[in-house]
Length: 265
Image 1 (spheres, rainbow, N blue to C red):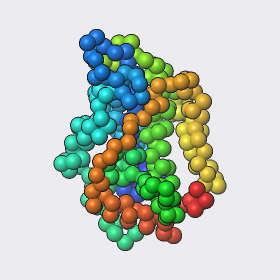
Image 2 (image 1 turned 180 degrees about the vertical axis):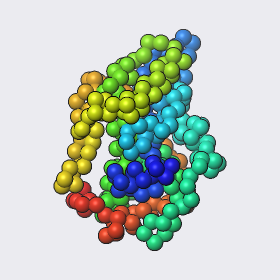
Image 3 (image 1 turned 90 degrees about the vertical axis):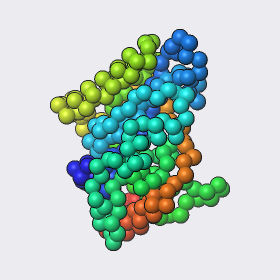
Image 4 (image 1 turned 45 degrees about the horizontal axis):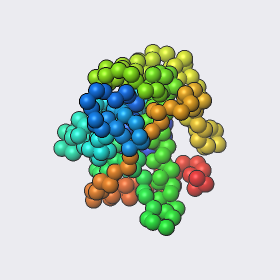
């Protein structure tokens, strides 16, 4: 995990982050006698792919098993990763010093996941209010780190079109196909990145500090069902999660932790 965190800090200037987590619905044909078990809130039948991506757009964890109808809080908490994070059984390194505090290592996610010691997500503005500038900057920095999983999903879907369309097979076979695509994605990303993910295919930061979107977006099939993310959950944030996020916010707004042009975002 130390190597993963070093990669995130080097590539995306976000310390102590060991992975970017997200989930996608994979469309399938409703199996016989399944009822509404696989019917998701988007209006089609699916299974859920939950993943963690590293800073180089490879999947360090995949879990493809949940029914499309499963509540999103349940998808994460019932996964092996969610359970391991809940009972602190993952081999996280000891807390590392950031700025003037020692903070835990963590994953980054969006509002579909509960804020906690090991999972950091953006601030959400209160109703009819705007976020304070320092929180807006923090959210921008989180979004940069989160783009790793967004890019991993995008590259995956742009290379394996079967994921963008409804799979006309059993859920068990669909799970195996999705897992195989993820494994092949990792293999080809390592074996021949210049062909599988060439320069500018994924998002990158230009010489002026601007974030430029990758070319994979031009290769996603029209009306792709793979683009649908899992639904936000209302999980209760933990105190240590809030404290860790506040400390990270202070760091990214400090001279030591800031990046070029972040105040213009």
